[in-house]
Amino acid sequence: MAGYLTTHVLDTARGCPAEGLKIALYQVSGNSHRKLVEMETNADGRTNSPILPQDDFKTGTYELIFFAGDYLRTTGQDEDDPLFLDQVPIRFGMSDPDAHYHVPLLLSPFGYSTYRGS
Image (tube, rainbow, N blue to C red; front, side, top):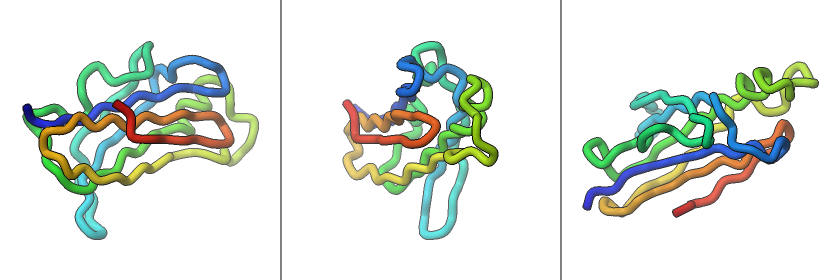
């Protein structure tokens, strides 16, 4: 079985999935970034398919960019200008060619957290 990558976003301030949040995935090599895909979260706060499916999976260093500011503005959570959080980058490594990697984001207007999920 080949590896793959999934993600989802939960809006911890509102207590619900973050629907309509744009996410971009980049492959990172040194200071070089190559955009692989851009997706948007669905009503469950997930992408409709793996953000990096088995057919495209390779080990290495990657970066997810979560466009939190756009989402926070759309949902009326933009009291400050400029926003405290705008784009949230998460750089991570994937070393097991057969693993499912899951990188969720727990988001509020003033903080976020992530972890390696399952």
